[in-house]
Image (cartoon, rainbow, N blue to C red; front, side):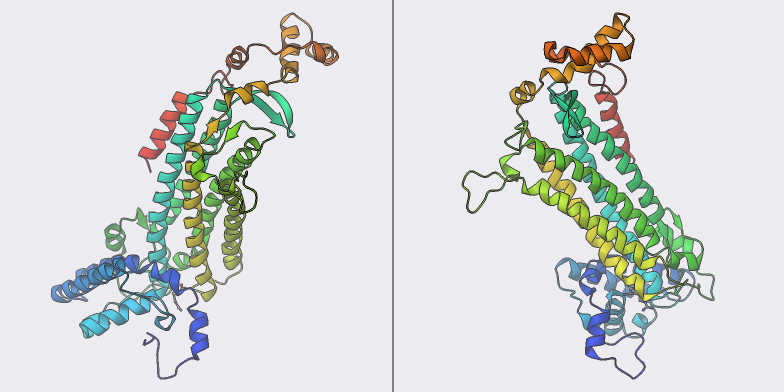
Length: 431
Ligand code: ARG
């Protein structure tokens, strides 16, 4: 396929392949390339570069590409170089001179920015929806087991009485914090770079407000050079938010895996997510949470790749930034899939209340015993020492009573689940 920059000399085939090694990721941008091109064409019509008939033909042809792409019939190959070249070549092939006008006052450099931002917006919306679903599943679990007692651990040693409700709602709060970060990165990404051209604008008063509005961006990204310099910087913010989501998922996974071992037995993962062994017939393996943990590392790796790719670049477009596209896309998909998988784990999770209760052995109440002495007027340090000496005498009290007594904000008796529910609704309404 003709390169847009072809001036009579071909590069080697292997050079062409190397430069377009990410072509499969451009395939996912076809739709966005067309949507952005339609907006650009409308703007060119508005400023008198295209006439109505040319605009109509371009819009029709671009919509045709969107349809072909949906059916898997607009396939990019490495010789196409990238999505921008492929679409422009197609328009020129179909529409002749009209096709040749679409590139007026734009550059592939701002095209790739606008395409990836539109892509990121859709994926971030999908991610936020999935995180909200996971929060709701965790809330159901928290409500069902608000007062199901279980041991709480510090240093991986039994510490104090806890509850399934405290455990699961801790992760809701973590995810809601993560959502705030995702939303902030969404906002940064929601700026329209179209019209910044190669990095230095164009010698015409193009209507950037108009294209930004047509494309549904919150605002125009102002400085044409910063538009380009922010490639990868905005993605780094997205990836850092994704890393936070993955870190939360990894921590949930760690508990799921531990608490469903034979030694603990507090949890049983649903059959839907439990796998077996090809050699040991008895096995029920927690492959899903284990792989989620593995994928936390992968997403953190993508974040590092993107940050490294841009950290020392000179201003303006640089080809190094091409690697930002692939790794951001991979991270978005992997995070969305991991959230979905975690939602499956949580919504099918079985809690063995009996085993949880039995695990609540007397030493968990040593501090409570000391506090009961404090209530009788003994200074805490003395009460602590007395409790230490009398550990063997401590009896397991009524578990639900103990849970309810921790009735300060955020304690097992005052988790604020209704408030959390409202928090989830509120954030999902604003997504
Ligand atoms: N495929 C390119 C990228 O992702 C598109 C921009 C090409 N621009 C250029 N000046 N070579 O970076």
